Each structure stands twice: as C-alpha cells, then as structure tokens.
Length: 85
Image 1 (cartoon, rainbow, N blue to C red):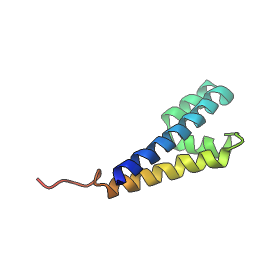
Image 2 (tube, rainbow, N blue to C red):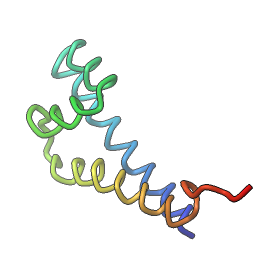
Image 3 (cartoon, rainbow, N blue to C red):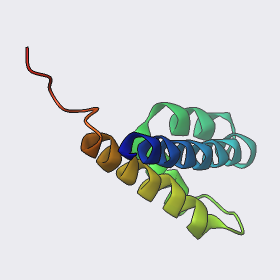
C-alpha cells in the first residue's frame, strides 16, 4: 500500500516538475531551462520567483509536497530500509 502511494506521489511531483521545466524553457529561455533541469535548488528558486501560471500554487504544492510524501511513503514501505544479510 505504501509503495503504491509513494509511486503516485512521485508521479504527481514528476508531472509538476515537467510543467515547471516547460515554462522555464519556453518563457525563460534556454539558459533558464537548462539550469532548472540540471540544478535542483535552481528549480526551486525558479518555481517560486519566476514561474507564472494560473495554478502556480497547486503546481508548487504538487511538486514539493509530492516529493516529500513520496519519500515518506517509500520509507514506510521499506524501500529505503537496509536488508539484513
């Protein structure tokens, strides 16, 4: 159950990241797009400072909360747990 929830949250976060990247490449230019694609902290900065979309708050919530919840659910599901030898 936790793995399914983690996968769903990962998918939501990934889709929101793609929306931010498309905006960065089209509205911000090639340099903004490459920086948002390659450098994770810059993606956060771009999303808060330069990203303009009618549903900006929902996209940012999906991107950030989806990633955090995915990590939580994967840990609860045992993906990140060390296995005994």
